Image (tube, rainbow, N blue to C red; front, side):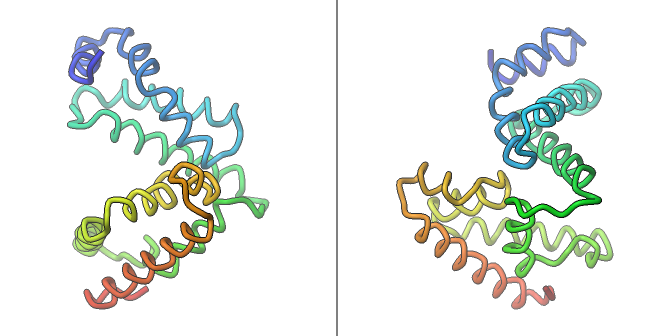
Length: 186
């Protein structure tokens, strides 16, 4: 079933929308949730919450790209759950490492004082991603959007881990230079 048909099911308030969403995008959503939470039960709960959020927001929203819409919901729910689960304890997993890597480039959301600055940052990030080669962009997005481990990225792209690390290092440096050029302090 294509996305338009699935969205039509949501608009008709047919419960089949959830099952069709699960068939088409369940694996994708579980992948995102598991990369953040590293726990099957918590990941599954976030995926189910994703379906509920989609049900509650379609209508009135009609996303232009259903996969991206669901991925963003899953990612945000998973990050919220991760923060909740790790509020009292600090573990040495992938999440702190990934956030440490990217924190040196992107200002924290707390320092973004108004919506105009957020829009400017989004524009800069989009221009930055457009400037990367397709391979660099995929590696960057896998690491910092999907929160994939370096070893997994290396395996998928048939590269060494050191090459992936170097690509990410260079991309972060390019992003940092662009942000500084645009007057956004890190």
